[in-house]
Image (tube, rainbow, N blue to C red; front, side):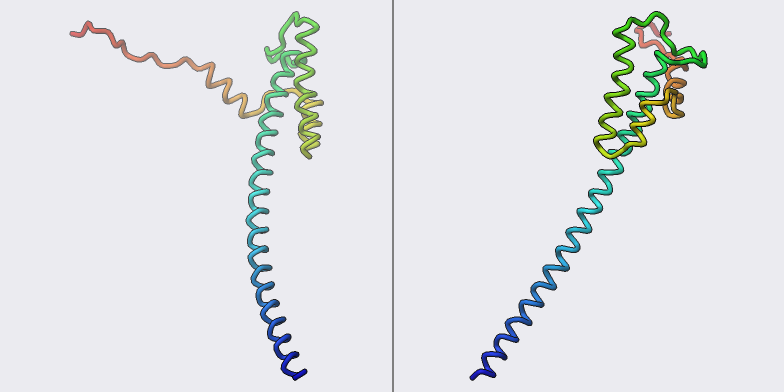
Length: 139
């Protein structure tokens, strides 16, 4: 009798172990998928902060462009100067709070036009081709 009870309990425990192993495998797959999602989102946030750094550095040139790049605005009011500085600090604090201290430091210490920003500026400087007239007078 005791032997039969132990055998039944052993089979029950083996079944539970099999079930737990299966659940463990499913949970590992779920964790792997979630980790992939976290990695993807982290990369997207990093790209967004990279864009923000470029914008902050370009905005800073309105006040601090010493290389005579032509971007410095002469005669900024005190409020305008504070706004430019506040934009850099606003971005830097958010970068710090989200775990990107390298971006925060760059926003606080550097100004400049990134290659991507320069390409956008150049694209805007090129004249747009004129479309042919859509008038009704045709030969």
